[in-house]
Length: 126
Image 1 (spheres, helix red, strand yellow):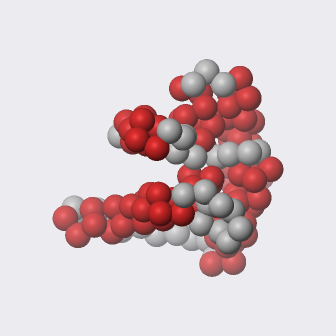
Image 2 (cartoon, rainbow, N blue to C red):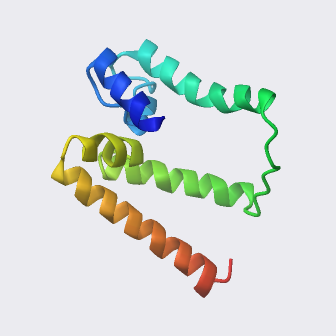
């Protein structure tokens, strides 16, 4: 579904569906098509809420504190700016386009994710 949505977004809008770019396009002074960006981000937020109304899903329990989650979100945001994109932009759209930069970026953030989980679970004990 993600690949189909990304392909449809490119066909309809003529640009890739990089979530960090779409979200960043909502910030003041960023320019771009705010209406399209807002509609896409609103759909990302509304879809799971609407799905929850119809589906029986298991309860989600998160052991991390709100401060830890906020710090993680900040680091992800900084990483997407520093890496010129996120998993959707590089991992879904960039690789599909055959971008060498996206292959490299995806490899780097996957390796960093693996290392982070290993350290958190096995060295820190989380």
